[in-house]
Length: 237
Image 1: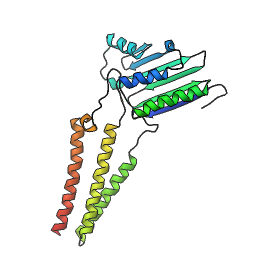
Image 2 (image 1 turned 90 degrees about the vertical axis):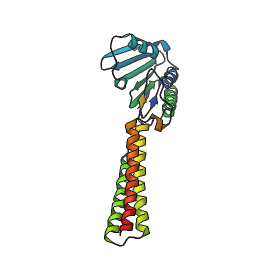
Image 3 (image 1 turned 180 degrees about the horizontal axis):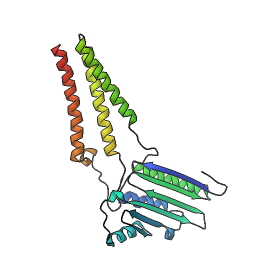
Image 4 (image 1 turned 180 degrees about the vertical axis):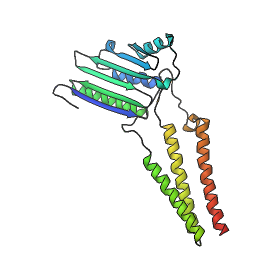
């Protein structure tokens, strides 16, 4: 959106994984070209609001407060920096699921340059400009499941050959593959925001909790069982 004297660029980023190091780096870049003393951080959650000139100051104020923070995921952090004389302003709003960026100013080169630099940092942290959906993968799962069922039915009422068995097994394997892919994507690519610590750099499997691992094992077991059932049906007939 542009006007006669002001250029504004705004975008939302999804699936960002930001720990303290990534946040400090992002805010350092965002403040370039503005008056650093004019930077404001506002941390909000259900029980209160904390403000300060730096993230460190805000977190220190929160720690010294008598208010407890039962769930860090409920927090959100707003950052603004500006240079009124130069007509420059940048805003970054951080939530666990989405990061909003808005840069405006009379200098279009600074606006687009700052936005591009922040965008690079967010994309490096897994950010995407479009929210990831898994509708297509769900369609693939359903398609492979229907194929497996149709081959199994045709084998039961007819005289199945190895081609029928092979296609049935491929269909089941395809359904399992897309189910696992969706499960991993949902769990591993979800956005995370940790204000006072670092995010785990371990592999996706190590970051999974016991419930997630059991779910993945259940999908694999179901797929193996389905393939075994197809083979048993072929030999029984």
